[in-house]
Image 1 (tube, rainbow, N blue to C red):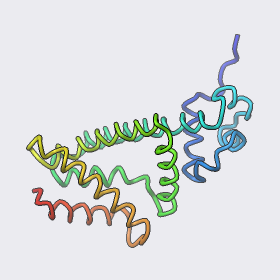
Image 2 (cartoon, rainbow, N blue to C red):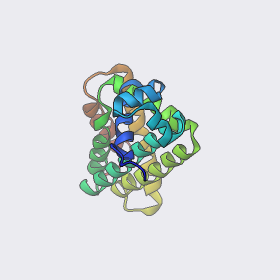
Image 3 (cartoon, one colour):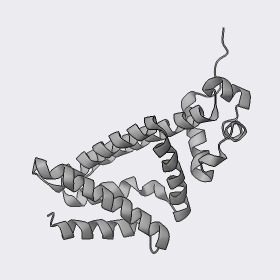
Image 4 (tube, one colour):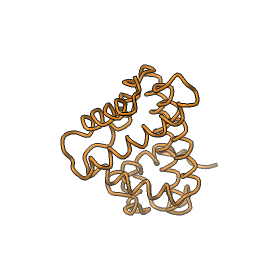
Length: 187
């Protein structure tokens, strides 16, 4: 008979997510994961096998959290261009300071390398484009294009803010995205 678990797999990956967000994926070892979770390195090896499997499980959990937050934001904001702006600003709330955004880029590097994680990114992109497109046009043929372009504008604005760090990210995004809406003539 096996012993009951002191900490669930979800609690493990949540603790490891905190570690890699703060220190980057390069800081993940079984020793650092043990310190973050309170479990022994041997217990973590038994559960996950190797560092890559633990990192993948953590990043998949993070994608689950992003999917859920995207669904909540989609349900919460009106179906108009200002609702699209608000949705994207809301999804940016966890970006924090420029340093935290830089750590996020390191996580994306891991997502780009792993085909399973890359597929999650593709699926999330489709859901985001759909959520934005429904707010930007009543014409079905225009929705995908406008949603895709707005998502690209959003990520570009986040990136350029990361360099300058002028003002707050939320303020910068509101301004940039509203300017984009006006420039493409979405009313």
